[in-house]
Length: 243
Image 1 (cartoon, rainbow, N blue to C red):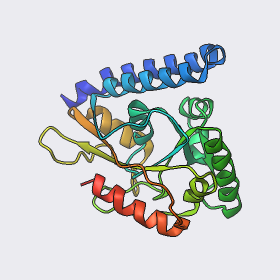
Image 2 (tube, rainbow, N blue to C red):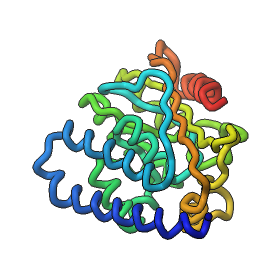
Image 3 (tube, one colour):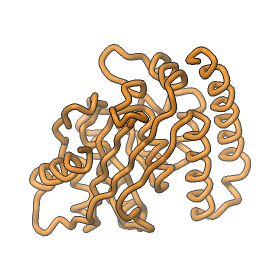
Image 4 (cartoon, rainbow, N blue to C red):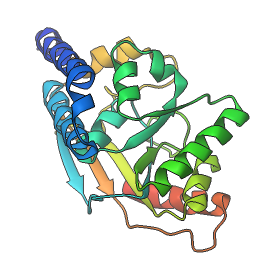
């Protein structure tokens, strides 16, 4: 069954990627931001179906910015899942910009790319994030800075939280989980350690159908907290949402 799933799902995913790329290149320039946002969310849900993944949401999905979403990070699938739940602009590692098809699509969708090893680049991105939030945008970050296996929530880097403080913008913690039909976590989607992107994608394509759970927490304001204290409090909130 696994060998049968892979080619059928792969064809559906490749077709979806091609349609998405064409839409962004040809149709996006004539659309309003609201139309673009709606299309990204629709396309993301279609891609999840092509992968055999159902979407389950809990909590109240935000309707508009300014807002910063703060989520745990498990897989290359996380951005797609969050977009399916609620389209927003992501802050992502610079390597994604060079991925075939995905990179140009992410850039067209407003992704802010960051060089993780450069403190100066992090300051640049924080500045652009604050400007984006002040314009009323909705942004999303993975403050762990890398993917984990879901057993333990990695420490949060506080730098990007500064953007919400500078822009006086609220934050919503977000918990992501991938769950098999038996209720156990799915390890097919993990992208950690020595995993390659191709290997992780093939495992996902061959896996039995599973569910992506998105849990929205309560809106938080800075209320005088500095970025380190707020990052710690958000770490606790995201951890509760992942249980």
